[in-house]
Length: 307
Image 1 (cartoon, one colour):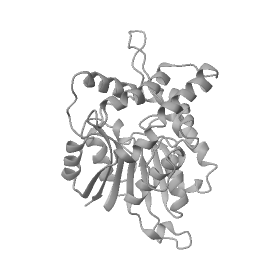
Image 2 (cartoon, rainbow, N blue to C red):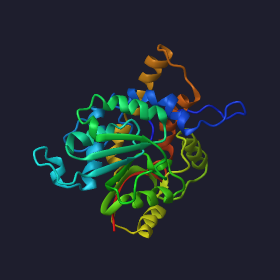
Image 3 (cartoon, rainbow, N blue to C red):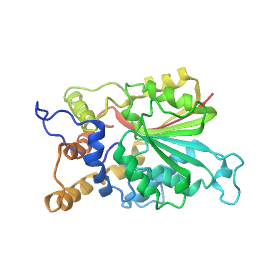
Image 4 (spheres, one colour):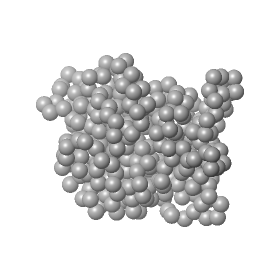
């Protein structure tokens, strides 16, 4: 999600920075407070949805990503199986919630996900067992910048609030691997926070750096370098959609979810506030101070086609 709840303790010699794996092993279970189905991302609001119904907005974000993948319509019709099932890869799948959502709408597709976190892999496989399409969902442990999959083996790849964990403002290694994995004509979709400009002024620089440390990311992708890297790799039909207003209704759920979590799970519950959990409370609090309209961070859906 870019993560859900968030807050960081001061760095000390006795408290080294939280690693990516440790962050999700300790704070990962807390995402159930955001989404019982572990949709670990923000939602997409459209006309007809209830802005108070968070899970429906989270599911709508899954559908918006799926629509932009432009998969063969036949793969969505349960009575008309495709001759060659579409193969889809979630690059940074978390617990596989988006793949399970896709499975309900792509009855013949082969769905794959990769995560760097053993806890996510184990829990995701357990959740998949309750899914009727469990035999078509395969989760693996690994680095999405260096996957074991053969070149040209997927019709579509996507990253839903996971591309931010790749290195650098252009996310070059991540995009290079996505390009390698896609067959010619295959589609990539990224939904995430981006730096719409590189202008961070005064205190915003420190706030942004603390935010990145809380979420254990190097930096958000920067729009201009990211687009140039897509073009350099040979992607075309590149579309960058700024959807800040679409995600804002779900963002507004953060204060209530955070307060409820702290009261029911921590103050009067069994969980202790580890540093990773504090990080997962502070980041959403900091995010508005560097996000549009106050700062350069904005939410985008980026899509493109491999040449």
